[in-house]
Length: 277
Image 1 (cartoon, rainbow, N blue to C red):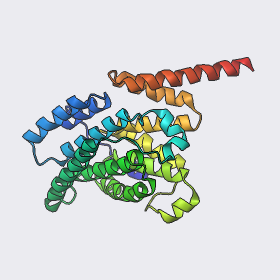
Image 2: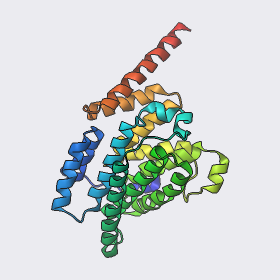
Image 3: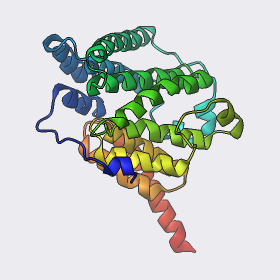
Image 4: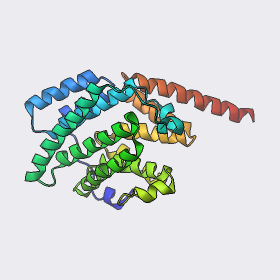
């Protein structure tokens, strides 16, 4: 663990907030209920930027699920991940995502004008920037533009980690960028540079585990990314453990159960092959 991560432990959560409950529904892929919770929270606290950034994230997850680009096969096969095949994205969903991002930015900037270190405002900006970068890369397939957009995500993630205590969810963003930059060619790393990003896959995994251990909202997301990384690196046993935890914690999510079954089959086949030698 890094020195900055050891400096302070994350604050405890006395009881789930509306944002916590919305994320729980999001990870269960109950997007309608997630939006219902967020809509009520917007009515009660219209100035909270997080409700809008989480709305954008819920719409992004729903669209990627509909387009079948949340399945691990998509992320393991580089030809699928990098192909420029046009997807039939829903323009109404795209409009909703970018509208929610705009609303989140407006409210976050208003809070930061009064309190420059407002945790929720900075997290909302980090989350919104990540949603835009992910939509650009995974739905619109504009990978070069997405890498450049990721700079904004990293900017806010680093700010979140300077707070006391740090917002540990930001390690998810930095871990993902470390791993991605460690996976691309030297030429790409030369033209797309990030401050404090080494392009180390190992450090990327370490950062994601910090999000798993201490994160509040992104803990399950970090587990999802780690399971993909382990499958890419031919370590199905490690992926199986994480997917088992996700399927247990979010039993209504059909994708977690499906992916767990596929990975468990890989583990059994691997064990059988080892015994046959």
